[in-house]
Amino acid sequence: MNLIFIKSFFCFGQMAMLASICTVSLMMLGCDSPRNNRVYATESLLQNANTVLEFSNSNIKALVMWSEGPYPEVGQNSKLIVFIYDQNMRLMDLPEGQSLEFFTLMPSMGHGAEDTGYFARLSKGIYENPSIVFQMPGDWQMQLSLLDSNFNELDKVLWLEFL
Image 1 (tube, one colour):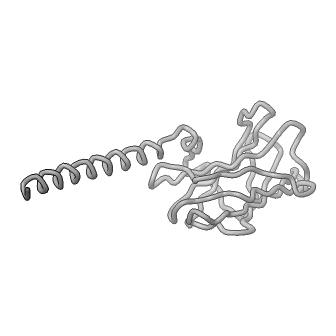
Image 2 (cartoon, one colour):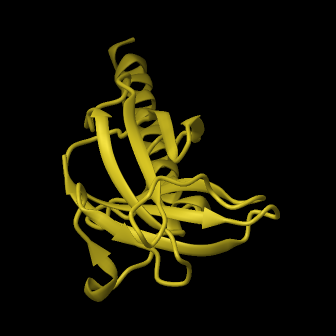
């Protein structure tokens, strides 16, 4: 009887180990999702947050500021406010048919944020993304993209944050 119990115990242990290996493998594959690989940068492209960021292919400037966060854990929404300016530093709305989108990459881990949210216009030239969710502390590369009406990227600005 004891021999049957021992064999069952080892069989259960092997199944549990196999399940653990499968779970970790799936988690690692999820980090390499195409959605998370949109942010690519070299040091020359990176700018500093809380300064005016200049889109290189358009006449638009942006000031990005966290109104809440950024929080490095799941369950807390971080809120990003973006002020859009023309070349004379006057607030302006995005040109007709254009929108903002936020992307992230954690270079040390190879994945993006759990949820990058969406932007809503608050008033002339002021946009808020109220639902960004990071899942861990560390180094994060942020990207604010300017998209056309077909969701093609027209331009982008990048900056680094350490959460």
